[in-house]
Length: 381
Picture 1 (cartoon, rainbow, N blue to C red):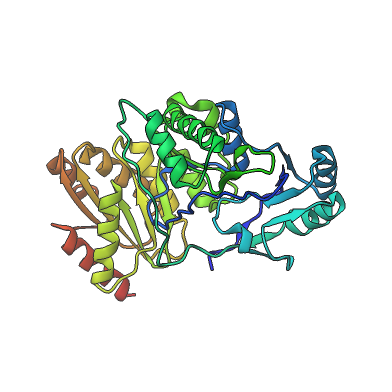
Picture 2 (cartoon, rainbow, N blue to C red):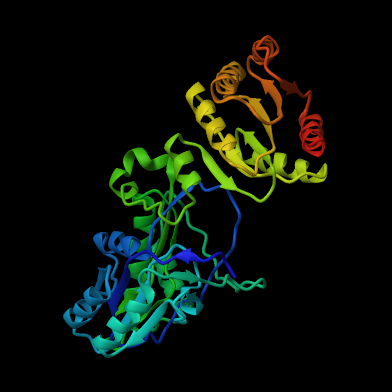
């Protein structure tokens, strides 16, 4: 069971003339990474699809049970689907804190839609994750220069079970989805299910799109839709300063540059008998102010009993890190042991800054040494 996610004060109602009869093969995966990609709600993803010629169902976004009732009447459909809008997967089998089972419901009666929405909006929805064994997926190699060819789109449509005139419709939608993927700098465009209505229309019945954060400068309208209400407040605060933060259960704060280095630092703390309190990635273009704000975040966490700084200065200037560290220690009042390992650009200047600071900073010669000293500093308490 995943951590309960707050079902935002909105649900989506969609026109569903008939349940889809031909469904795409389902493909889901679980991956633990730093939070690097913009993640939109389903209704936002579907609007992007519709704006780019991809066929989706008619829908309304509502914030109250009364709005849900009125929207259901306006749809005037044979059957309506009501979907809670959260960023977790497995909504259909989730459970609300109100006791309602399922974050996705079908009904032909607008009054029932209103009653269901009342049990969804404002409550928490907990969902299950994907099965460990996974699901078989068909793959198609795409030439990024040529794009999806007509023959490839036809073959993919056939693989998904679309026959006759439906195959041409599906192939057209597949090509539009690929063009959308490129146009909006997406890292993922997922449709599940991709099916057929009773009227013989091929429709995307669901939508999930993730984006490359590095493209924010040219996708401003899309990134303006970002909703951080489901994140921990500390994650949103970190994002304000271009820091990537994930909270963990331990007591040794990790302060690093680069996701790979962050994972290695967490691992070596574990190997030496400690537990990391977080995963904080400074990234490449570090400024002194970022170091200061990172320190504020770490020292504000009551679980943190020691801080391990592990910086490899390839792009990053170690002297900037050192100046940021000393400034933060003086102004914030360092109250926990601090172990620092620096390597790379201007490392000797950085070490001089730390050594001459007069602050209780423990230097380490390498990552192994740093982890041992951090774990030992906590054990002494």
